[in-house]
Length: 459
Image (tube, rainbow, N blue to C red; front, side, top):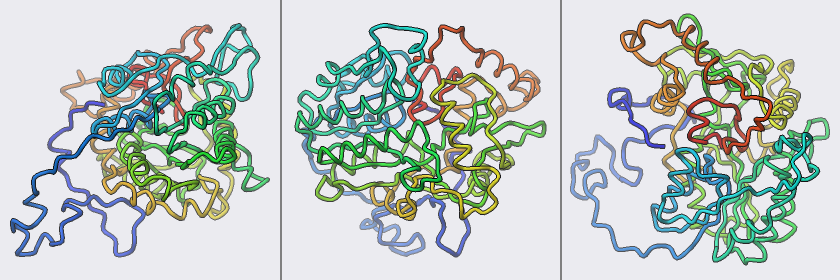
């Protein structure tokens, strides 16, 4: 997503003072491969990587093609940008070519676009109008022709299924087609079925199908790797979307309300910035290193209070966490509503003991690797503080909000009044015929605002 960073705010260094090992990502201003400290007399030496880089050797372009689905989503678009920049070719399934990200993908010379749905709907009815509903739907099938076409001439695949259509059936069909095509490395973006780890934990409807798809991929013995993505940094918004709404207050501060225990750690990820480099490194390392492995893609492991502290540093305003139920203020697809209801049961706001909060990834061992395993793949992530400083204000402004502007730039409008205006104008619900057929979501938010509808990047 092309952006313009404020040169003043972007130059503020990130400093986190601690004498212990910290769960925060610390930005390295010195080149990570330099063997000299910044105070060393050799720091200005021609032999220091800070000041001298040898000419790049000629490198042939990778003779590989990567299959990707839901290509305008955050995860897929991040990989497409990085992979095509270093010479990979991509065969990308797009639901349509509408929006900034879809246009970016479609106009990339190293991308072959296959436009269409992964599901089929031969007989639209009132019962199957909303294809985000959990489970099989009458009259809704799998687009096998598109899927088989996707894998033609492909060696690698990064697959992130969504809840559009029957996710389990689509996930199985993709795995079958990849097996038939002889895919050399199949990376699947999975999530846990918490009930599989503890019978007292409810399954999350949008995550459990991914767990079942992962099990099927393993049964096929595909040369596969499974990545689990943390909470997206850019889920946060001051628009009234559930779960990650940072509601702006009369004094200009923000409040985030969610059911997570304030002292229990959660995994965090800047999907747009960091998924692509990590997935590309997995392809480079190959299945000899990562076959059948589960990898936690999370570059910070923070409690909600710690996350708010970092966000506050970045955005330059107080950010306070309040533990409480998920507040639904806008209409959402049936599938996501069911997800939120189950999530509130899983991460009960009434549980007093932080140690009893289930691991976000279901598996405690997997979360024990946060963020070390992700950093093994990609050493340059964008942390939550940096995101809040550099990207959050831009995305909010693109959604029509003006809290980040000086008073003389906002015609003297009151922030709360302006916020309410945006809520009414941009989040006005469409009529009953709107089945939310956009590509904005995978396992993140699914509501609409100008930026989120235009760029289709909530995935």
